[in-house]
Length: 258
Ligand SMILES: O=C[C@H](O)COP(=O)(O)O
Image (cartoon, rainbow, N blue to C red; front, side, top):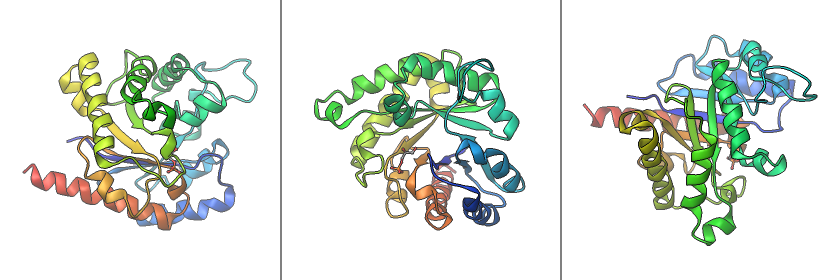
């Protein structure tokens, strides 16, 4: 059975003072039955990796350049992230797509670069509110999925995160039926491309205003294998209940399958 994953994206938040939150998480989870990932700003990756080395917490990055090195002032490559201690990288977050005009083709290049450096790529997809209201959600997801996921992706090196843009940082979340519809659709599309057996093994995360109060209900939705959490990942006291809810969901699923 695939391991579920809860990932925290600190975005452009955190300084060395924030390492106390990470130390609390590392102390609380020396081991875990789910995968736990924290993606701090790049400035903190090396220190975060050192601090969490003896725990179940793994460290990821928030973006990478598609090239391994070169004249790209201000950018960071996937080999650099791996060298700093990252095991994963988020690519195609809507804030990168919007603020930096990133295309799905570029996102696929970043994902391939991540894979070449042994990093798991968390590839983000999601529709805007206008697109949802125009009933274009599944078309947008289909296009982003087709163009952002490299042909060489596997369930071992790629995670898909569905993040409706209108739910990010707003306190709004889609209904369980809306989340299920999109996750089922993603799973089916992956099946059409990579085969049904492989598609079943890809981990699909939901992201957008996940918090300690709604996590358990979200994790009970079919085809939700975890979450990509923004604001509620900044404090150990908020993130821990979300991790615990995912561990509970994993245990419930394991006991119902035996
Ligand atoms: O990467 C995380 C998502 O953008 C969700 O952010 P949020 O949990 O603050 O809504």
